[in-house]
Length: 393
Image (cartoon, rainbow, N blue to C red):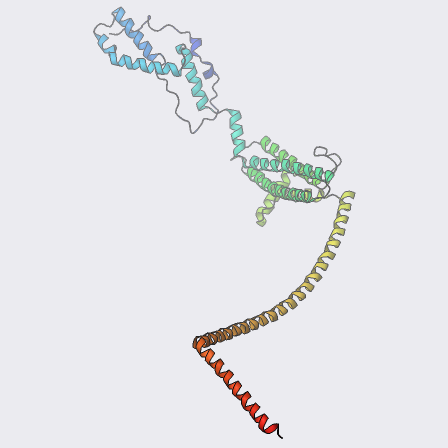
């Protein structure tokens, strides 16, 4: 029979130490992770060492008798346990058994339980309302920077192409923000309808409603500043600011669902904000517009002159084309005559070569001598006739 107690092996531990701090602060209502990786194994945090100590104590006490062979492990198993314990000691520093167990429990708590702050941040990142609002905020910052850059360009260089390009980018950003704000209003209304399903409290919806109105005011301020308003973004005193009430949002949502058109109170408020943000032109803007009008007149006059010149050039080009066509015909005729003359010359050259081949020097000298003899005979006959007949007469 085994003894019921082993006083020499396991020391007595007070009950206060068994109450771990991490277990005392455990909140059972907190969310648990759904996809949790493998937890660290307890391994042999003293279990195998306790078994070895137990075996030694039992051998020394001699209380187990014939059952000692069943409890004592073989030499190979002990060596394997030593290697495993050495690896575990490298993973977990040498501490007391209770401290190691406490460390494992803390690790399990960190792996299984979610941090409320991280949980809120993850929910915020996955929320369509905050995603859309972050996008609008980024475009707002970009638009403010573009407005400041355009202001500096106007102060240093006046109205240039770069300033016009900045103004175009600002208008595109404002249009994009209005579209995104309409989408944000639709998202807010849908979340308000599904408030219980999404587990959103009334305080949270009220906070989002305030953020919606604050964002609308910022869009309105940026739109006014893009029109040349002198006040800064934060100074809103003395000016009507747009706001959308929750009742208007819900009414507009119900009317849009009945009419089948996706219009929201946020869209109506954005349109009203755009209308309210339309400022009168300043003196500088009027001067710029007047200067641009003068430039347009000059440009139009130059365009008309260029058009007339182009018409004249077109007429001259037509005349030049006709003359060029005539010259081309003449050149073609001249080329044909030149080819014909070259062919005649080639034929004459061939005839001359053939004549020269037929005539040799001997024949030429004989013909020349005969010609001289004929001439001498003619002279003799003429002189005789003259002396006999013509002289006497």
